[in-house]
Image (cartoon, rainbow, N blue to C red; front, side):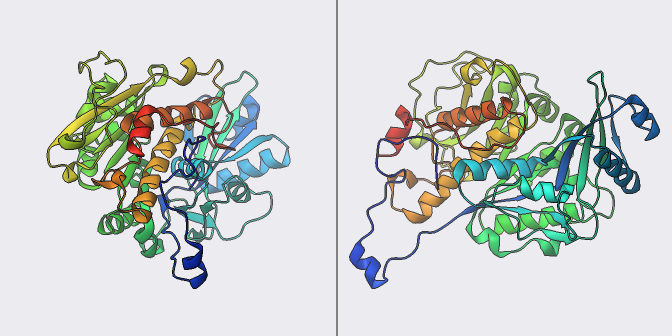
Length: 434
């Protein structure tokens, strides 16, 4: 598994050289592998430049987001395609973006579950989805459907106004029996989005999601949830608090979603309250930066070597050099927090805000997967004196997530096309690698 950074030691993981005699004798076993599993509503973002008359003809309210039925969506797509109005067709979806970015960062396998059109024509939107996904994202478990996947049309008029037309297609038709059991035996995490639980009556996606959660929990795989938008949370705050408490270990959100979930406008107070529901919390907060919070055991907590930060929780980053754990694995749990300002003060020009949070989450998944990989292959390492969630300290994970988020902001697409520049280990990572 690749990890960004030119390391001072020969190996990223402190493993011994393979014995050539054992290798020739066939005694040496292959290393254990791991992968991230995610479920998504498979969709494509289609951007086109149209006229006001076009919007009126299709009954679309300028500047608004409107749900359109399948037949109208097909007519709309064929018209903009045949007229050469389409400027971009991006593979989309919160989890699809996250898994793609994870596989680019880690140069490792992830598994995407969802649906895909059984009949794919070259140049179609389904074809574009496949073309824009990393080859390291396994699509072999996608369930074939007779019909289109989801489409989100971003229609731009000459004045620059964006109007959105969303067609769900068959994206919510994933059946529980299409969720394979065996993939969870070697999984490091299961990643979900809140959108999966918001479907029309009779659609099987929520049941498939609950099946995946059950299989993950039975296999001891941490469940990661990213909240969709503030409106999804506001509609059913009580439901989401209960759902997260019962089924989720790691929670990712932005400051608006955090406020909707907890009632706290201050991101620091919000992640503190969110620890009542989940064990590790990531919260992106625009120009303020990025916050993380979690638990560690009192016996293995480590004080920061950086300046203590003020806030609604005084000196909240005191134990940020600690590594996060599940609360149930702590003998005496201690809450730990970290914060980092935008990388280099933030980009001089933001080209894209869509997917910055997904990029940050991909970094967290990478560090969790690195920990699972190392624990499986070097179980006697000092890195695993406790059942930690991540390979790195909370501070280092926070820094890594912030860096990936920056990389998304400066590109036009929510999906990375390359890894990150190399970096050296920080002081706390050198300590943990001993």
